[in-house]
Image (cartoon, rainbow, N blue to C red):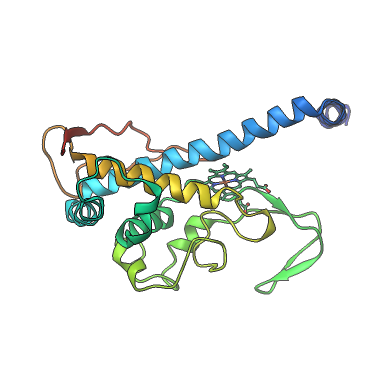
Length: 238
Ligand code: HEM
């Protein structure tokens, strides 16, 4: 009992004092919030790009199709800018397919039910911690044809989007606590991927191609990365 009291009271007191001090020092609160935003925004974007390059190296036909689109839109420009992105529908489809198969946070941020409710026949009591498995939803055979296959073209003929309106695909969550960085994140993902596949041709050391090329083991954690670092060779295209 004593152990329980000591174990629960102390963190509560620390949190209480931390919040008190943060409310008394808005500059510190702001710094903390900015750092949080920085963390939420950089690690997730890195994961998307890492998985995107992995999949493209394992599927050279997709890489080639993407390079044809990006290079034809870029014409003789070295750098792709934000204005060039709107016509790149295959690029957008590739990124959506990556977010479907490798959502950076496969289990969304834990949330707490604010009232008694019922979801699909299950009673969820007020105060219940709820974990949404975004990966399980986006790889579910009831919603997706050949769900485990990397097929970016599925998004060329689908109305499903990643903005939280279509609950078959929620890599950014949904509702009022959904990711506020979604528009920024998508532009960064598209811009970086477009530029690296435009400016370089990519191979894996040893010249191996195909689905067995790269180890697909994952780390565990809030954001899921490749377990082994991605090593690829870049040859300048331009
Ligand atoms: C590919 C990139 C990103 C992915 C996949 C992603 C995904 C997510 C997810 C799943 C959540 C939780 C949503 C929920 O529980 O319903 C979240 C929350 C959040 N994200 Fe992102 N995010 C990304 C980029 C960014 C960027 C670029 C920023 C800021 C510039 C950002 C800032 C935040 C913040 C502040 C929250 C907490 C929102 C809240 O609790 O009200 N994220 N993000």
